[in-house]
Image (cartoon, rainbow, N blue to C red):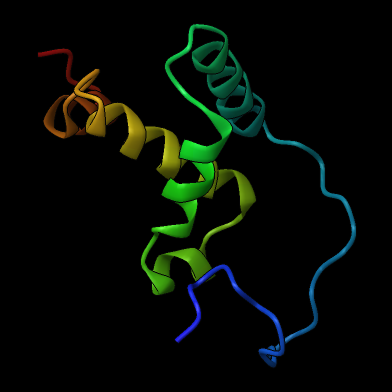
Length: 97
């Protein structure tokens, strides 16, 4: 069975949207975060690719491009022990501790 990212010959239910959309602030921020982490040697392109391709099929197919990046950055930072999932969850809820 092909991996979730391998789309060769797979029929789609709807046409692929090819038009550009206005970039949202959070998309710019996740790109910036990825770039800073890469410059500091904390994140590599191959790690991003692996983390994106490891997303569960349902998530991979339901979220957009930069959301996949956000998921990958989170997974890699947690995997490397640079941040905990619990801490991220708390901060996303607006709690600092």
